[in-house]
Length: 363
Image (tube, rainbow, N blue to C red; front, side):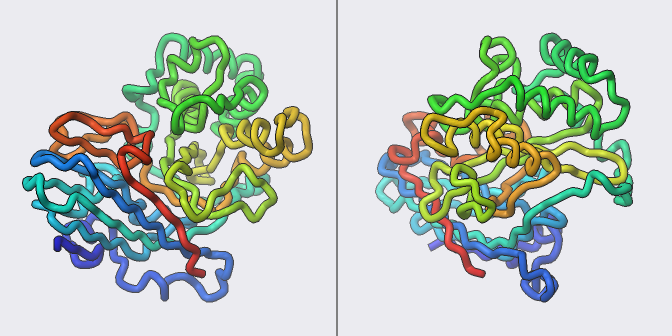
């Protein structure tokens, strides 16, 4: 059996920080921290001598709202299994490969995390330390799924002009958020969380999609407006305690992946937003949907500009992630990925890829 513990890998611990006593580091007064164990089980029925699997695990720490307490895994029969950190990013994964087609092709990963609701007081003066320009520069760059020229730049400029050309980052981000809430809709027929192809979303004619499409659009429009922004890829781990049936999932969370977004403003740091979940409330909160002016939609709209509920676990904020040993990149890394001698497996079809993700609340 190949087995590793997160704290035993000094190279990973060095890049991610020390987690030796994270439980004790959570203040006793912070009773609203919630702890979960998330288990991912992969069982490849298609066994080959060239099978590989890459499973995302939570980011080491996202200051103020998520701490990784422990990651452990087992991969009996694997030739190689390791906790791998992609250099220069916050991506962590369990990378597994098999050389013997007759061996068991199973992997079990357990992640324990502590999460907290987020709420940024945008009415108060910001006092957060200003990040250096070099640290923010990557969040102003295009990606393979989110170009910043052409229709993206044209749309961003139009939104800012219609909003009176606000000069500050919060004003620009608010203009984009309000425009998206008014004009974008969730398309329940889209597979998974969508492709995240921003140019397609803008040229499709209906401004619809799921979270990777819509929150990816927010990020691209923000960057094209000169506001640092990033997608945050993760998975829902619990039901909502704020009254939104559509914004939570517990137990079997194999299809509960969810992408959120953040933008940066001097004095406030990274500010959470989620226009995609506003569209989700409008479509799914009750049979037949809700009008955008319905009280629940307005409540979600207010909560999700500057706030997130802590019933969700973040994996990473990276784009165009190269999987070790795969020879290719993925636009974003939010689902287990796999390949056999017959080719890549469908990450959006956990029943046939044969992976299951479950969540259990610990405290």
